[in-house]
Length: 165
Length: 455
Image 1 (cartoon, rainbow over the protein chains, first blue to last red):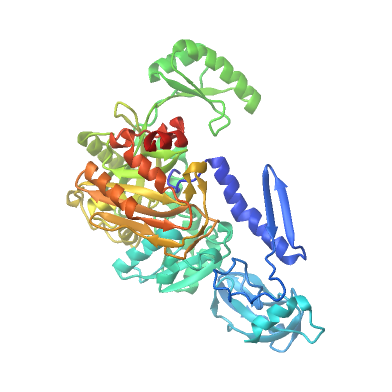
Image 2: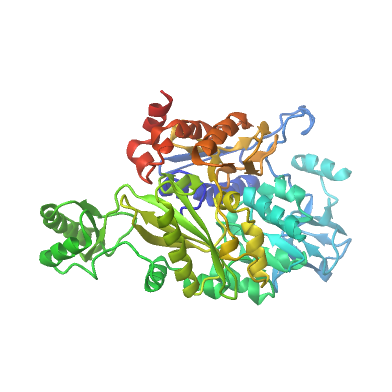
């Protein structure tokens, strides 16, 4: 297998690809769902530190600076597709229904196997953005979840603002 | 012929396959990971579909996601590119089970050539020389001496258990052999709990020479000459060229014909590459077969005028070979320089980041296969190949001159690349003499090599 593009020796390459493919995404996901601002892991001479990029209060909104956007995934506005396949909406979560974070809003069928479309937060099912049987891709927004009537959570303010238009 | 193909790869090869689709009038659909949304192939495709997150295991290595993507976009075939699932017989089988065509050898052919040891045995039966070694395990010192004598010194003593180079010893004389056997046995016993040893001829200062073959499903095949890939660092190819400066015309014809005959007899199908080690005396030993399009295929395209990717697609679609051996004329000399995002000064460390400015070189005989553009961000998740600068000239010195000029024209700003290495290489006596061996860079050390040529 000498056909791969030139990269360092097998051990370094293995460690790097494991870092890129497994460890980093897992750590980012951990940090994402936590309240932590920073996460540091030490292992085998590696040290990885992840810091959440928080916009300081009063800073210009993202995108106004003109610089390349930071490669941080936008928080999902609604439920997104877990895979490439065909959408099967859940009849029990029709538009207007109240749902909780983690509720199953439908499925995406991948080669006959169903994968769940999960609500990312509590709220009301606002709109399905794809129809039953429609082909959808990974990460595609499928269901809009409107905010529930409850005390506004200050940490969610920017998310709601982003949905407004 | 297919009307729509899913390209299940990324980077420069996704773009290369897309270009072949355009040449054949096929509509290309590109499957991409979330990290590759902004790539050139995605921009140029008729349709692009996100198959998963950056992590390869859940995108480019996810058979179900790729096949599902092909089905929902109405594709009839999947081109896997190189790496990832390109030689995976299970994936090829799954593709077929869903009514799609895998562009590459059929699953049973991939299966037949899946094991390296099995492939060596199979192709040896069809006449390919393999690295000579002992028949079975070494019983005792006397047996070892007899086998080493038969194979010829220097020899490499290898433990049957273990792997990755552990516990191996190279010996040059019968006296060293006896001593080495004793040490190897006790080491192997301690490390692997098994002290069986065998020996192989040690090929010193070898060259890597590979033969390109194209075989249709009716058993008609052609070879498209050889490529020399002896400029390597830690078994990774950096520069490839054709024809090989290591062998003469009679040797190259004999090698290519022998390789083609063996692989056709063994039932191979589609494009493939047979890799050989060539020793100082010009003897070639088969090491492995690559059942896919290779990174360095443009070298052969420059000499032959063939579009190997288009040929690959046609064969998968069941068409007979479009050329006969007598139609193939290999003209001039071609060199490919792999442009990688890596820091030569720091152990070739891979780089990622935004390409602030990119400009490809041009002129007669210059081809740049690259997915870069100014503003493109190289993600940290994949390999470091940024592109391939391929030059053609009527002869080797002319090709080297064009390579130098093209390297000077190439602009990649914003991240560190291995361009300084290529400049040094093109000025080095070993390369100019066509005398590069696969172990040269590792033996000298890349840093020392650079210093010796730029100083």
